[in-house]
Image 1 (tube, rainbow, N blue to C red):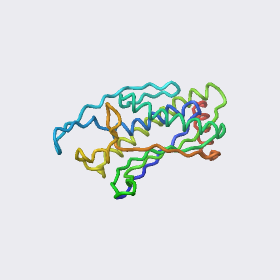
Image 2: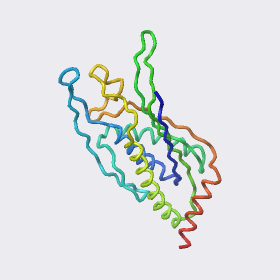
Image 3: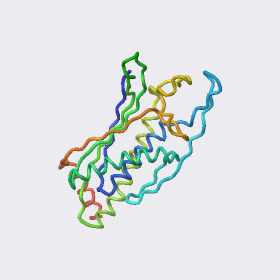
Image 4: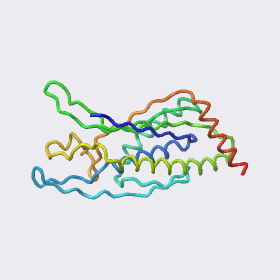
Length: 218
């Protein structure tokens, strides 16, 4: 099986890291989740509905849609919070990457553990910049909102392609494909990881500052 890999990149202020990551991760998971499966007998099942919520950002001019599951939101927020803290501790100007990997399990014979086979990975590269004043922050608030809108459209376009998805499992195999631990939604099995780089590339920082200065000049 070939694992698909998609890369997104955003440049934000430190205070925008959490909201931008939540917006992108929740957008992906919204399209990689189903309602709970209700099996009537082996091979016959119905699928529950997936509720959604509109979330307004505080530090970005942007509203995103997420699955209404509070349990799923807590899991995502915990991972993003750890990433944000690690990024913050690396210095004021930093660079990091958070990855969302979808996988399925392949049963192995005892005494070996199950094999986890990734089929899609989303990597989000984050560049953190410092801005000089409130006027620059306001422009950044608008520009980041515009960029996030473009990224969300990109995510939806990628997900709408007719590419590999794990086949719908039988009742005995559902835990090999979906995370069934949540009571109100059933995302494909996934894991979130991150890594931090100590320094920010000059070109990225310069590009954001030039974008802000060009806007101020208008």
